[in-house]
Amino acid sequence: MSARPVGINHVAFEVRDLDEALAWYERFFQFTLRGRRETMAWIDLGDQFIALSQGDPGPGDRGRHVGLVVDDKEALRGALRAAGVDVRPSGSLRVTDPSGNLLEIVDYRDVQFSKTDAVLHGMGLDTLEKSEPAREELRAKGLLGD
Image (cartoon, rainbow, N blue to C red; front, side, top):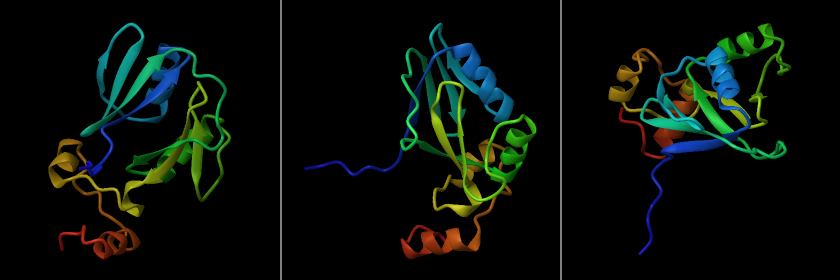
């Protein structure tokens, strides 16, 4: 018998300097720090989290990335551009953290990834709604409760 994957609990990144990484993430993302040790920290994403572990992240990898879902991709793009980060003015949004971890930023409203109403409420995102194309994707898979 095999197990059926149902989601991702967390993503772990190696970072060269934990304080530098936390400062960068805090500059561009609103988050709650779940916990911290000398060489590790955990950033809450509602019912999931990012684990940051100080170590040697090695060279950056242009192809390997994590798709990070945010409530407003364009607001983040604006903040990154205002800070002088070189990102595209429109379309896909990819950015590397100070240790070279590549993030592809996607807007919650536009992808099939979904949080339960209870999790959205707990995160203060009660009014965040899916776009119609995302709703169609969910509907086609039988994952939309309407």
